[in-house]
Length: 154
Image (cartoon, rainbow, N blue to C red; front, side, top):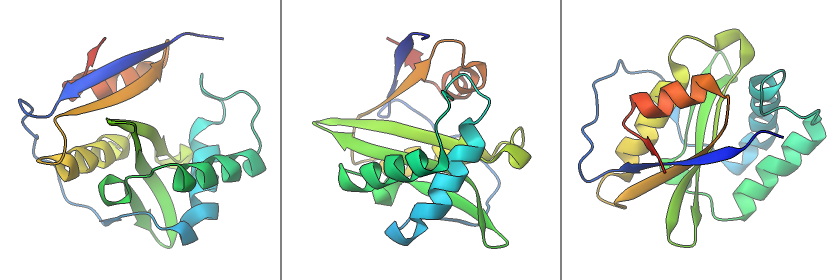
């Protein structure tokens, strides 16, 4: 199994780049199944996929809602009644963690993950000084996304 590396961003010195607006909202518990389907679509066939089922994705999302989600700083992009992308954050002890970044397979490569993470980071300004993320070694799209936004590998 590949190693995972921690990345950090100092929000106090971070400048948010401008982005185009899009229909975004905070996730809600009633999105559980839609978030699980998004997770399944986003991770299937990637370095972070290890044969998990949709039922396991439902359990993962339920766990996120149970274990300290930062819903006000988590965002999803929705269009035509379906979730296209999302950034789900958690509070773990005194750390803010970008727990999941997901874009449904048909919408990858359009900048949606970047938009979701940017919106999450904007939501955190003034509320925390640092944000963390764990990225699997070899997950080049995530590495590019986070480094491009100013995160540094620890």
